[in-house]
Image (cartoon, rainbow, N blue to C red; front, top):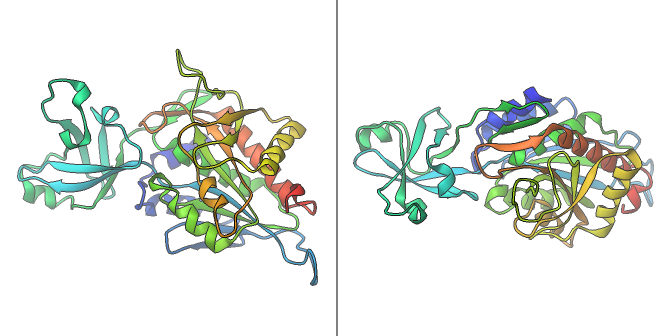
Length: 346
């Protein structure tokens, strides 16, 4: 799977500019989908029909809808002003730290590359976005405007690194979960209920794509796949997730208390199939499951998380064993939900 991880990680796709990454994902999944479409927000929605849909009319005749989500977008920046010397001022797109940006490069959709710089500071603690600029090598405003316009988005420049069992690169949040969905589409065989695999936009700006996709699909149960934080590096704050510990099953984050039936289904599936797992309570941050759960009159929802170090930096790191565990768990959960028993939920 590493070659696909590399392609997904290195692809361009900050929030609101997901065209390139959507095209890559679509080329990977269209052979597995019975129907594929892009909605008004830009979400890629793939419907997989059940193998043996319930025949006739009456109770059980209409397939239930299972929504499985991962977001395509990544953190980045957007140009807010170009000064007379050709330097770009910018605003963050998603949760960026100015200290992470120093010495880094960004790339725009057309391939233009810029370097982050900063005004003179008396103390590095004073570093804020309004003290920073991007240098694209332009000599003046006119030369800069020939390459970049106000409102253009850019993503971090970072090459994929194969470290053996672990890999590192930008946008593992949430491209690694997109990989999990792609693999699940390839392997899972829904029996009587249909599955909607959603590759969502603009999660980093507030779960926006998942909110509209869920409203349109109107699912009976929702599962998000995303990364989570880590607690296994030196003197890290206590957190019950470690790289190499298996798939993380979320109990709670800032956007969601996992539906008990969905969470227990995940735990039971992991134990039944011998899939390594760990339980997760995330104090800050959330996933698209938070938006799915609040759709219409409410949707039982939960999250499978891929443990990830150095989240929201250009060098996010995941363990491929954990990725495999997340794939196996998602396949098991989808097949259980899409069975005649409906996982005890549908």
